[in-house]
Length: 251
Image (cartoon, rainbow, N blue to C red; front, side, top):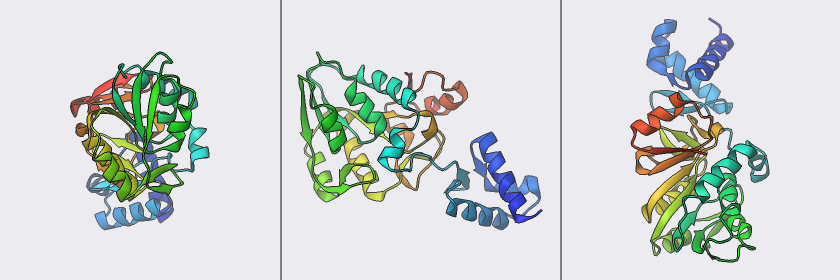
């Protein structure tokens, strides 16, 4: 079998099964695991998949710049934002992550809600400028332009001094087997810090992020309380997350 044929077969199987297990694939194709791993490395270098322990997952398409990501799955993100906003209770202190799904959540917080939002994202702060009752605490740090958020030691230090009721996380990869992931190491550290200081973490996951992976792991899925997904997300996709103990909220 030619190299290009093998690569196409791998991509077809990834689309069909949502995951590649190198040992199983090498056995079914009667090829060495070294050959399969070499093909996976090449496909990962092309941005066509994300290698994980034992195989590969689809690469998250949520890796473009903020403007590109803002145009992805807008109706789904709006629905997810509405469902997430409904979880916030009066008087709570809430961490809201950067990202386009979290931006939709901020925009849809009811005008009658009195609460405190703590964020490291100027985009989230600006989304709440006209809200009459939400107090906004904006955390500083090094400005990471790709995600339009603050990162670094100063950000993590500020987070460590706050106890929040809820944290709404955006992640570019959400996989029951490989965890929550993002494309930048410092951003992953900030998200872990936010998780550690919140009583509950809810992950906002539009369709393109589910069963996908990015290079830097934030945490195992079971460390979150729940997952907010689009209403038409198939049960076979939700079931592994529920098996990890997460509450799956359909928007």
